[in-house]
Image 1 (cartoon, rainbow over the protein chains, first blue to last red):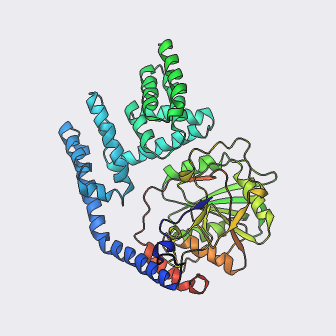
Image 2: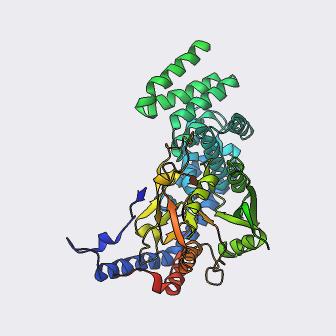
Image 3: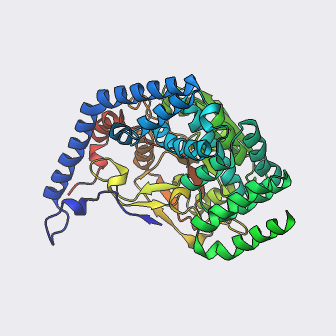
Length: 223
Length: 225
């Protein structure tokens, strides 16, 4: 498989001309300038990341609805958005915010009640990605089912599970949801199973709609 | 140390049991070629990637070594047979990668030039490995450099820890060292992505420093117009 250049020398060639030494010199100057700018920005970016993480961590540790709202507000700042390009934990935390909004709308325990630091959520996010991939790759059932133990131990809501699935980079999400729905059903958590299927019917690939709907109707009948 | 030609060692510099466990879970699922044994060698507290890999290289008698990042999962269950099949195709093949640059951009940055290979992140729905195995007809591409997410070697050359004392460019450097010694460095055509790399946001804060060291050290091997 050929993977095109993010920015190849063609971008530095004169119109209708092949790559030559001049194009190469322009590209070199451009790349050098990118790294020079990045080095200049490094102290500001690193300080910014530390500062915003510190503030959000403080709010998470306060364990109050007001503090959580303050943390959510910080993630809406333009500065936060810019810093997500440099820090994966900040980027992942945007998913935590979506989960918190759904959970607080439903007046339940929230994802923020379960974490003390931003990086706690990144570990949850990555662990769920690992479980989703085990399901996608059809590893042995006990390895797949470890996800239910994890979900229960970490007290993850079904909103957390579906939002992480929607936001992460795993493939075959519709197939994964069908397996997860079965796992929830085995624990007699039919509402959760139905919720997962309903979200995927609405947001998943249209070609899966029929099979997901059929599965949902089977559950409804069983309940 | 006497080399064991029927042994494959996975060498992983690690800072996190969390990532290492998942990485090893997949290694332990791989089909093991007939007559071969497999070893997993985690390297803790490495000073640099090159230093850690040198330490690993010196600690095993395995002929075949798979150097990989802790956040890589090998999804292709036939991976070991497949890499042996690639090495068997030409004795001059010294190194195999999953992603590589047929011609490395003169600025030294792999993603500023065309690359070849495959990875879960770019082909994430195509992972049904039932009945899959690499075939000679699938082909491979000679590359100048491979990405350090996973590198397989069949002979040992020291990693340049004298120059690359961080976490960048040890991979491109090692690819160049292999080619300097006359080996072919290749990326097999992967009709399905053999690996996933959960690397999040790339940390490039020290990248430019090592890029400049690389460009200076290997200037005569870099293509220019």
